[in-house]
Image 1: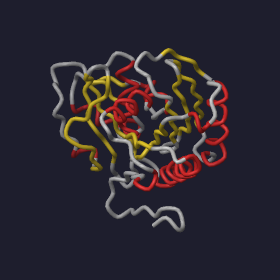
Image 2 (image 1 turned 30 degrees about the vertical axis):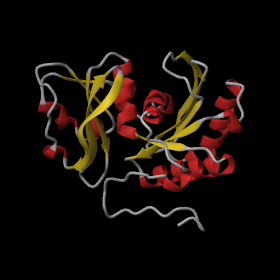
Image 3 (image 1 turned 60 degrees about the vertical axis):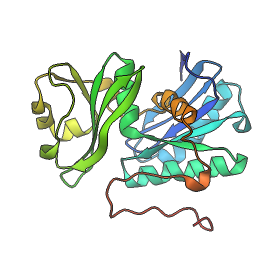
Length: 238
């Protein structure tokens, strides 16, 4: 468990993510963040709910005290996204809580920005010779997407960031395809932001809620980037 101050948090926000090898949950309440994380790629479905219960208990909250649930909406592992969205559905339905999807790429970029980066290229290994990637800049301390998130071959990445300034890069895409680092001499690897973590979704969720981007659970929207993958809601809720 980690406990951090967070001056931007007004709402009580529960965040969860299982979209990559990492499994994590976090809650922000009264300016304090409680979080748990584990690298457990084949244990997400067993690990996530106990993590949720643990961080809520540490914050002395019950689920009904939460204002909004932020969930990792992808891109990432198909199975991981399904687990995250399904558990979010179950939690939100029971208490009729609003939800907000947070990009896994944005969460990684936010981690790098919290560590001092101003420009970030985040990339997740998408298998099949491709990566999920997105470019971000820091705006008022928040990861802000430049253009759009893309799935492509590593050689097809086109940078529109300022190549004269430092660019932090993060994610498993750089482990799988280290040649991406050759796109610019100003790139440097931020190993601490290799995976998305729920605690870095909290500020992004707060900002999204402030901008009216939260939805009912019926409008939960995972993002796979590959058009050939479709999402089916829980039975009876198509």
